[in-house]
Image (tube, rainbow, N blue to C red; front, side, top):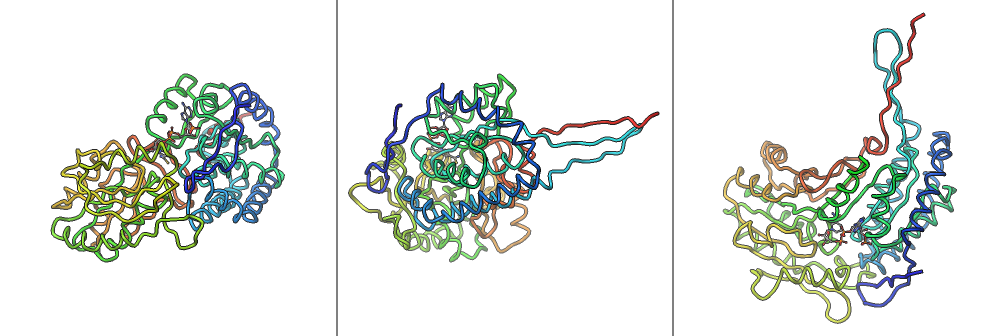
Length: 454
Ligand code: TAP
């Protein structure tokens, strides 16, 4: 079996070797998932709910272990990693309530009774990126299983460890082995089989817009259902009437969390010109205050980038000619470290203002009027998230309605709350995850008419 060496990005040491699933093994796993589907969808709703709650309990009991695995595998800070494992538990618990509430509609029609049913799809393939290995996996598999589907899950090649552990915990909780299978391997092999294999009825993909387009095109051949959660270049709009101290103090955490490797990172700060100088004065100490270092330490706020390759990509944006305003600090020596960096590109056409860099680099650009801020926030093909800082409630609503993005927060940088829908406009994605309606994306509506005529 071909193996892959998992590297700790904070030390560059090998953590573990993981076997890579081949195309043939993927097909065999899909066949097992397909065979397991009729029995799983027939499990009584209350029993399926109980199994998901047991899975949530098993995750809860393993939070510290899962968190430590993520620290070693992905360089996430221990605080973030605990939150991420807890998020899997919470999402499982939230969707464990669904099997018993997955009701259709009785629609008034002449001549009989009309009912709708939410039928599961069959085998669902979930493709997960390396930036949030645990939560993104859970947002796919929890509602998919709750709806009665079986799941094959492919973690990113770089970050398979927590997904493998979640697979073990599912089995410990009593979820049948073939109902939820974790298949570590390459996207071009395992992920591609999810797209091509006709028994996989839906692909849930999170990752780059480029690969997302290929997945969508591949799925089109079978009219396969697909949910895409792709990139973002998200604006943090700061108006002159905002609480500037708070806006500046929180801006670094809105973009540098997870070392900026977050599709919701607010990596473009638009500041009203009249307060631009003042904002930059407040931002500099806030950026210097971000604690970058050993992700195992409780006090650490930012860890390393995921890999040498990704470090090279992020670094290519900040060469000697880059308009750097100021930078925080990062450790030297082994590890893929990159300091929090603030840049001031001359206009929005500059790659620093328009590309998803996916690292701790934030561009700050001034704007004049409210309408300019909306136009500037909408300048890319992305439309995932964004923040609006203002004390004017009317303006907050006007701008929130004007920005073409799926997830906006006012006087906060929150994007993902499992109770609410999450997803992108434009090339940031297709469909929504999480929230009360997530099961719509994992079911087909079936309409049944029963004649009552004699
Ligand atoms: P992608 O290549 O898009 O990888 C995401 C997932 O898709 C991984 O599990 C990957 O597997 C898999 N994959 C790759 N090619 C595939 C294919 N042909 N068919 C099916 N699955 C496939 O992202 P990346 O290379 O890790 O990162 C590149 C850039 O994407 C980043 O710099 C960032 O800009 C963006 N990104 C965005 C997000 C989010 S949340 N929107 C997350 C990660 C990255 P392998 O990794 O095993 O190849």
